[in-house]
Image (tube, rainbow, N blue to C red; front, side, top):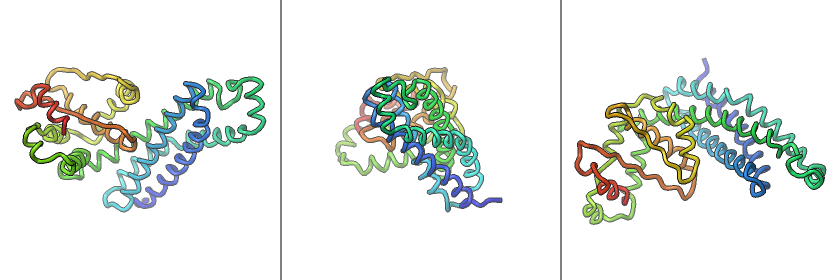
Length: 279
């Protein structure tokens, strides 16, 4: 039976190849991204995929020497191995693209138009988007498994909230202003929802079309509605955690959340929400 170090090494090797191939494709298409909306879209997806590859690579490395991670890493290994065939396929595509990036390609672009060249055909771009989406789905599942397992090992069951509290405590907001605002503590609601979670809770939601669309599109809106006690808070918890992981490598992105509750007067209206968001 393979030990955690061996399993982690196998995962790291495939992730390294994925990073290399994705970086190469990103470099290729970045040159042309301003010339066409389809190319800009492909470039954005490749950039996002590269960030996920790197985040998962770091997460696996952090758990390489930890105890009791063998079963966890095996699940991650299965998810990553499902990408191997597509990564190899993209590697071949990448080589073909760069072989075409010669004077011959430039001549064809000038004579027949850029759309006539293989790397820029609509069918090629569509296939590339499909491959990127397939890899992304498997990698995000693997990353979710690692992150959710890690959260359960922490005393309060959630590393994201702990990090958020530490950042808030270290901020430059003075104690006098905090006392004046009297903002309700939403981490209590967050931790309560976390206690009800299982490692795979809500993955169907965050990997679904509606959530992915909300996360990727600007000025988008997602309304999750349902009767009392149906699990909205738990799904919101999963969505918040997933959003933090997705956006942590992006600069200039702020994330704010608030839990309304009938059990606490300060959390029943927009006044409490605004006071909390100010912090």
